[in-house]
Length: 104
Image 1: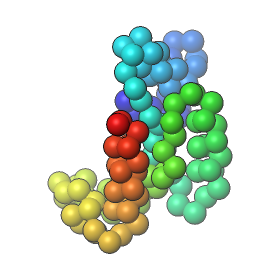
Image 2: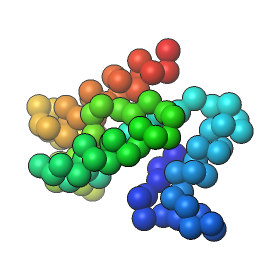
Image 3: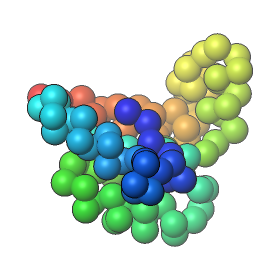
């Protein structure tokens, strides 16, 4: 379930609390994947560190904001189709492999 860092619930808590509550109530496993990361910024590692507090596995591969992701979206293709050897495709592929391992 996507959550935006700026989104808040009615108690002014980050929306991730609501997402976690849904997972707990439905006994559904979940993981956290950082997306919209900033290229070349240390904020990504800081954000991933903060996300560790939520008691869910955090994907070690952040999805960084890349032009190829936006280009693929507007073109109706997956980034691995648009630029199969690019950084965005690598991030998507590696994060997806990690997610699949977590689901087993």
